[in-house]
Each structure stands twice: as structure tokens, then as C-alpha cells.
Image (cartoon, rainbow, N blue to C red; front, side):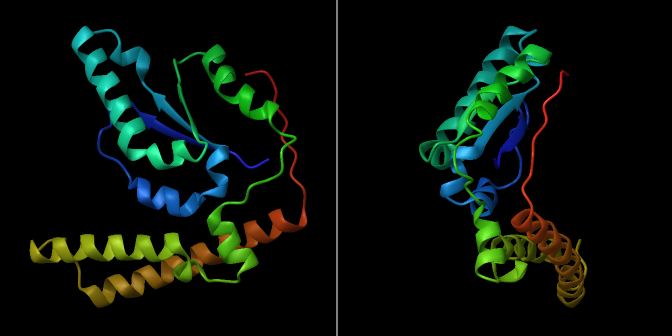
Length: 182
């Protein structure tokens, strides 16, 4: 069973690009995604913060996560308790008998033999980082692009090796999930 818990603080309005997360998962694996909002116990103490938290949650669901939700992803609130955690993962674990849905990244690297830089998420990440670097350069805050390209290449090679090893092991071995009391 492949499953992804995407944790996001309810008061964290800025965050990683949901486009990158979609590119990592792909359409088929969306059914295995649970978007979990956190920090509700801290936010609901004050009425005005509670309204802001609910507005943020609506933004996440209606805009940032909408595409994956439409493809079968679910959303949950984590309320800082054991019961809440079990309520989030138990329904997902109950579906363990359904067929595995690989991540798009897994399909691209393992089945299609692409390098990380050739995958959709790899290309998107590289372009986003390069754009951020160019903006920072214009502001006089960044290092030279050649150095950026070299460092990105080194990081990609290391990440690619670790990811390839992990995906290769996952492809040849079955995984078991053991759930014990928290």
C-alpha cells in the first residue's frame, strides 16, 4: 500500500508549490493522498484566529489541493490527539487490500528509466529553483548561475542515486506495514 500524508499547518499560508506535489504523485496515486491540516488546537483558542484558520483551510481545499482532491485525495484535520491521528490513518489502512498505485515519479524513474532531471517533478523543481535564483541575482543576493547549475547537478546525482536505490528495493521487495498503539 502506498500512502502519502501531506501535513500542513493551518496558519501557514505560504508553502511549497502544490504543482510540484502533483507532479510527484501523478493522477493515479491521488487516491493515496491524505492532506492533513495541523495546529487546530492552537488556532481555535481565539475566535478571530479560528475564522482565519477556516479560511486558510478553504483556500487549501478549493485552490491549492483541488485537482488532487477531485482525483480522489482526501482531507483531514489533526486535532493534536491520539484519537485524531488514528482517525486519519485508520480508514486509509482499511483500504490496504486495493492495488498499489505508484507515484508518477516512480513510474518515470523505474518503469521508463528516466533520470531524476528528466522526470516531470525534476524538471519543474529545477526550473522553479533557477527562476528563484534569477530573481535573487537581480536583487544582488544570489550566487552565479554556473555555480547554481553545478551545485544542482551534484545534488541531483546524489538524490537520484538514493531514490533509485530506494525505488529498486521497493520494486523487488514487498513492504509490510505494522501499526502499533501510539
